[in-house]
Image (cartoon, rainbow, N blue to C red; front, side, top):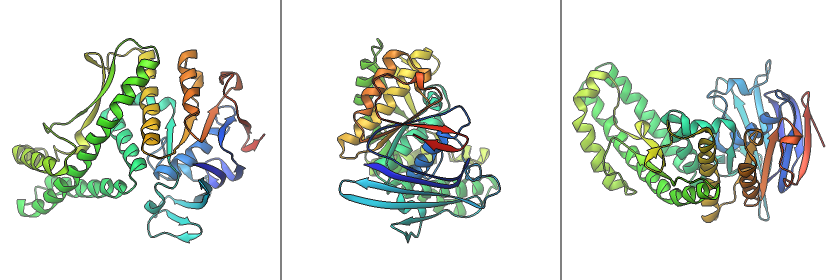
Length: 361
């Protein structure tokens, strides 16, 4: 898979931009603020329908414009898809596939599959559980786009149930939402546990290849004991746990059980990486998670695009070399860098310069 054409209208700093892309490595070099990361962000948004830099749509739309538009041509084997996405601040986004409107923007999920790595990914190791949950869920949606609907349904049910708990609504009003919560929570936790089980050996191997001494592993953690990759079994466990904490939920006005409270534990030897890993070990773990994700998707017959957003300046020679090796796994890699000298010498490919909103070879 690769993007052969990308056109932006009123996206971030670009009134208009059109760039032709090819398989292999494509690098965008430009000073901070020049707009190179905006290009990477547009592809990430196309893949996940969300940005890795902002939780809302408004900052993506150029100041003074009503909407932003991302247009792309995506090549998969002998087939080319045209995917267009209209981003709006105060109404639903609209998408087209081969110029045909879709009922929902979610219909384009899976058309452009991406694994991205940026300096913000240190939050996977050092940050709060929400970063690690988001990592798992994005990987799940990349692997199985249908799960985006399940995750969205869970969020909707969770918000409604929390509202009812907060307003101390009668149990009869809460019960139907509890049933739905358990249904979606069971499916999500089963998928997450299965994903962690698949991903773990890839993480362990990648961390070892970075010449790190301590063994690395990942563990799915929940306040519901015994969760597995079987949704039916999880249903019974989550239902029992909710009964156990029912009084506490009413007192606190919030749902205390479910995938929104779970975590992915990153383990180094006998200790959690968070709070114990050095700066270098944290980088190694973040790199391992991302390359492991790429390898897992490749092993399952997918071919995601790899995006390396402004990371080489942060890394030593050994970690840079590992990322260069990872570019060989992807049919297309997009790299951004503030300074050309930060790029590894053996990172060959097409080079673009980004300056004052213009992209030139």
